Image (cartoon, rainbow, N blue to C red; front, side, top):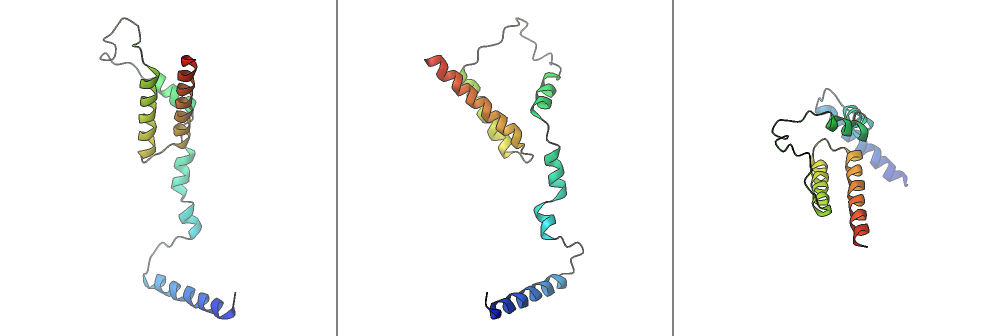
Length: 123
């Protein structure tokens, strides 16, 4: 890098520092803090595991409204209906502000399994 360009870069940095100091911002963050925001990292670390999510769903008590059909027979769900339901849930999770990548990845695996089962039944 030519000396003139280095001097220009240094002068530009000094001007930028002056502008920043003129703003009198009380809590300047360094680049590392911006890129690795601690609260964001903490929320990613607290993401529930697949087993915890499944257990949480299994532990939910059934409503009286959900138990109107006492026959004990589950309604038939076609592979296409299951695929569309999983796809809709995946899209919802991707759009949700607390996006949980592991859960989205798990749903993609479920979709693959549904497609695999669908192709296996056709043979």
